[in-house]
Amino acid sequence: MLRGIYTAATGMMYQLEAVNTISHNLANVETNGYKRKELVGGSFGDVLIEMTGKASGMQGLVGQGIKSEGAFRFETPGNLIATGTPLSFALANSGYFVVQRQDGTQLMTRDGDFSMDEQRRLVTKSGELVLAVRPPGNQLTPVTLPGDLASFKVSPEGNLTQGGDFLGRLLVVNPSEADMARFPVAPAQLQMVDGGVKQGFIEHSNVNVVTEMVSLLHANRSFGFSQKVIQAHDQMLQKAANDLGRIQ
Image (cartoon, rainbow, N blue to C red):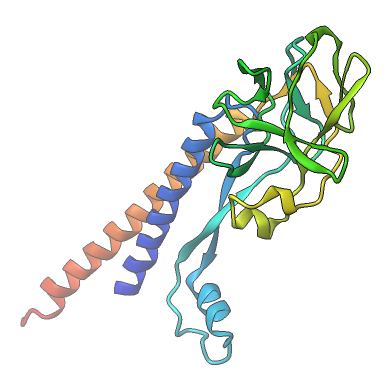
């Protein structure tokens, strides 16, 4: 009977974590380039078998329940919103822009809402430098815009030109799941990809508010069901303790 309480308790803890994930999605619905996440769970039996590599003889011995195995990131592109400004970029395909902090740390982002600093360098809203690859030797360098912004153009492949002069190619990389698990990674070591750069656009988040609200209701109901299971088991334990042992 205690196993039933523990099983229901794991369900309540899992749904609490699911609510936190959904809340995080809803909080970032207006964040450019944000990718929604969904909690993934597995039974304690499956997790234990995976860890030990032993499945035989465990049937009926492993307690039931659920355990969070992390959040799955949906990499589908969000809606592209036209801005009309030459310093806004969106990626229509998979991939990430590579930016650099002042301390030299390289990060990845889907948010292409860039601007220009006092040194006419392309920067993010947080001040990180947007990187490009330039010949000779494909060296990494911050994007600098020395001339008129009206002549600044970006091709779908990420080639940067201004007044006919080649400034470099935007560094867009597509990390693997293993690389994303080690975030932040070293993007300079990853292979460049054609992200389908669109100038004058920004990518909205791929969060659907209706979908998240339905998931939130489901998580709340599941939490309530698990709570009722615990209450039922508690009543049965009280019955067993108070009545079964009573001498007539």
